[in-house]
Length: 301
Length: 202
Image (cartoon, rainbow over all chains, first blue to last red; front, top):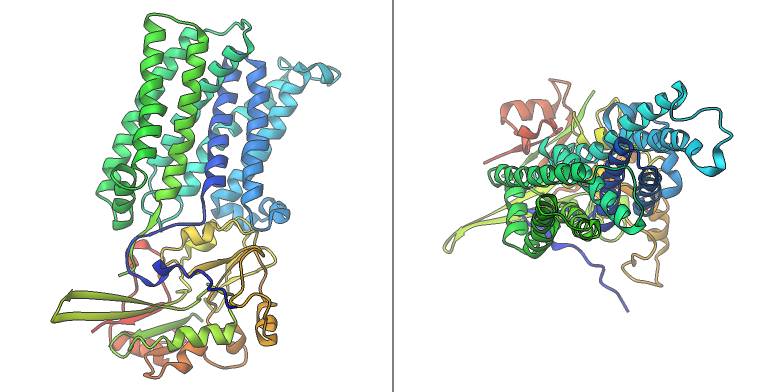
């Protein structure tokens, strides 16, 4: 008996067509890269060793694992590291190198701080350690922001083709890093020499900036090509509106902002900010998912 | 040399011959159509107009698919054709997302069904052996025919001879003269891709 292969009718119609290639796994990879890189930067700033190690794990296993699972031919992934001609133009190739450099330099930097590697001939205070730290910091920022450039490089999908996207990813990455730090502090129940008050202030600023930038982004896209306008409609009034308004905006930004403002001015247990950090991370993840899900090609005629 | 094509939309009758002959010639996998014909209806009865737009890979001079490819599997040949080296493709599908004309296709992992599961024609098997699962593929202007001095199958098979193929860099070639005289236009030139396929509008 013949089985009718599903032929996507959109391929023959003239209307905005949503992209179907990058979905959940890529959303997870983008999310892990953003919050992992952000966590490394925040943790390094505050001397939070646990956060540094967690960041490396999130980027290595979370981001790397998701990418690996998404590739059609994952065992060929090493080819992305050896093509110099691709490195000149492909943000994916540049990003993969950034991830590798981040993981190696970050691991080498933090290793002497861990009990098993005290025999290594450098520490965080030696010149070699500081060089590795500098490289890791730059690479962490690269890991956060390159994902925005990967999406922005595509001229086909107007919703992504804007420099606002890398900026938004950087804001979300840093905010996600602070969220993870709060969650870690709340879960560990130990006292680190971390100025939590400063963390809360930074988070408030970042969340406000995220809201402003998202508003600017959607306003800009509302006047862009047909594909972008259709994507904005999907996100704000269509099939993705619950995810966007409910999860990304309310759960991911408004509630965390309100709670953090309360905690900053009134004061409360760090566990509360840790819990809202989880909500914010959920918003961060679903923002990326909504962007991928709504990405549409403009009609050809 | 830059291979290109001119398609006269006044001659195109939307018969889908080009689409079918492409599938026969290249034995593309189920659900993969290197050449397609888009149709658009405009107006209301009784003033209705239907436009058929044959599309295929435009072998762009500035292909965004090549720029995003992390392994350089997608590369531009000296004759202007944008080709894919299947051995290098990792299946990231960045090129599919980058192509503004949606003319690239991903032949997925073995869980994708064939048209007739359990019944595979030897011709179908032989044709599909050329491709690799979980990689991206697209129109290549029938490279195997070009190497034998033949024109692409869609050009030859078109019953109204709506397609003209040749070297766009040769001003004396039929395709260049036709493009110049009839003022062929590209699809979405504002994207900066500089396609090698032109359309003659009516």
